[in-house]
Length: 304
Image (cartoon, rainbow, N blue to C red; front, side):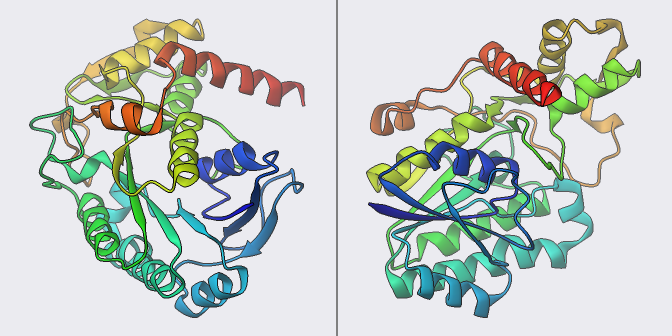
C-alpha cells in the first residue's frame, strides 16, 4: 500500500489525480487543499485541509499523515495575475514550495512538483528536459526558482513540467483555452487569437497519468509531460470550433503584441516527450482525442 498526498486537490489537475487513484486498492489517498473539499464525490480518499502557504500547517499535516509521496499541484498559475501580484505569486509558487521541500526532506518523502514551459523564453522550442531555462515573465521566474528549491532537497524528488493544460471538472475556479473558446463562440462573440504562439496542449487526464506514473515508479529527476501535438493557439481554437461545430469566421488572427497582456509569453514552447515515453511509459492522447474526451464529459455533466 502506497500512501500518497495530493496538494491543490480542488483544482483541475488535483481532481483528475484524485479520481485517477480513488479506485486503486494499492493506494491510500490523502487529498488536501485550502478551505473545504469542493469535490462532490467524497468516497475513496481522505480529505485534510492544508494551506501550503502555512508552514506550521504543512509540517503538522505531513508529520501526522506520513505519506510516502507528495504530489504538489497547488500554485498560482494565472500568468498575468502573477505579474501584477508578485508578493502573492512569491508566497504560493516559491515560499510554499520551500515549506513542502523542508517538510519532505525532514520526513524523507518522495516530492513530485509541477512546473511549466514558461521557464523557457520560447526562442528554441519544443524543449527537452535539459534545455536551458530563461523565463520571460514573473510567473516563469517563480516556477524556475521553485525548481531550484526542489533540486536542493535531500529527499527523493521529481519535477514534472507541462504545457497549456486543458480539461473540465466540477467546481472549476478557472477556465482554460478550450472552454473559453467554446463558450465565446457559442455566444457569438468575435475572438482575437494569437497565431505566433505555439504549444503542445495537455489534457488534464494525461498530466494526471504522468504524475501517477512518476509516483508509482518512484522516479526522480525532471520529466516533460504534455500533449504530443504541436500547434499554434490559432490552430488550437480552429480545432475547437470544428469539433463543436461552431462558426470559425468569429476567430480573428492576432499577434501577441496586440493583446496588451501584463506578462510576456514565450512564442514557441511545447515539449519533446522521448524521456517520459521511454522511461515512464507515458502515452498521451492526440489533441483530437482530448477534445472528444472533454466533449463527453461536458455532455455527462449536462445530463447530471
